[in-house]
Image (cartoon, rainbow, N blue to C red; front, side, top):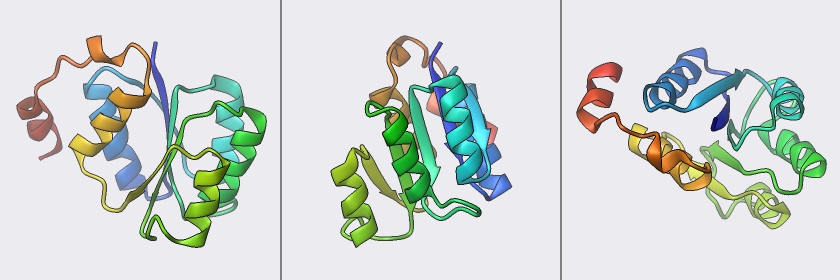
Length: 137
């Protein structure tokens, strides 16, 4: 089954992202800081990590660096308020980060990421956009 790890310290956003993905039949694990993200990545080897860039404890950039050191094929997307041309983002992209997404991220963009980077996801998405809109309203 496709597994996505969502890493976000804002509990409301974390729950919203998880709900959107679960409604669309993705399996989701969550973490609230970089240290927990690294630990969970090593345990579950998710198909995709969607991670906030600014996190307590270990930030998203350092967590990404440790994840990519552990698994050079890791698929990690950072969500940040910084421009993709920011030095931290440029360095992470050179290290293998697959994408930098500017906040805020919408439901459609989150689902598009999941479909694009998760194997076998195209057959799992049977929920309509109307169903999704009702669930997050």
